[in-house]
Length: 296
Image (cartoon, rainbow, N blue to C red; front, side):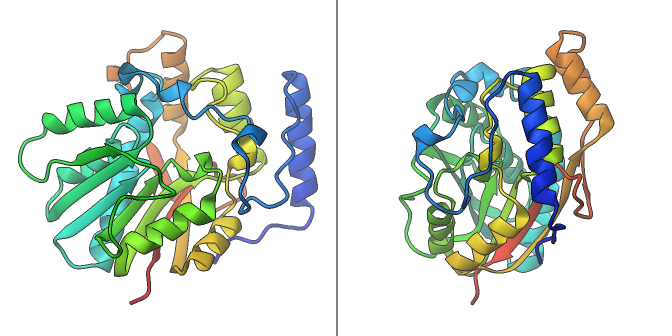
């Protein structure tokens, strides 16, 4: 069940967001009336292209360095949920695969029969394919350019669908969730991680990461597009999923310090060892990670 928030949390969020935006002379990002409605791309302030438009940005020392640090924890979580829900061998689709960090990591684990990844970024797919070609053994993940709103796969083609670090970029969440539901077989599992929309995420993910420290490019996210767990739960239920559950997915202080040092040129990516942890949900969580199941 999605975590309930006190009635005053909306006013608190609005106040902190307004003050933070004013300090950095940013437009006040007041939440959309309905995050599950279709949002026109021109109405948002997110750049879904430039932060990912070069192969080198996906390398461990590139602008997506943070994803490399969090990847082991989320892949272990996804793998555990998949193995605990369905029987092997596993056929997996990675929706919005980006540079293939999850797909290529899963490919190195036992009992995965096939892994497909789709994304709209050609440089990201190029990096994903380059890494896949260096993998030993099978399966070797297959990557292709495709929209999450119109997947080029048959109904019930997959045992598991991954939506990792992508829900917060979508302008039509229900349509993407419906596609995930369609391509899953009955009894299949959807695993995900995404960013909460809260005071904490505005401070950490927008003000801190994009404008103060510069861990990621400005415009990589639009705080208004972040999804609260209760919103995602309603979206999943509307698509037909059941058994929605999630946990907090938090960066360690060491990871934040190392990424800050990397952004200032004070630390090499190869020296970073901080990671992410999974903990009970709380109002202070930045991200959350979880799953839902397609009924049999």
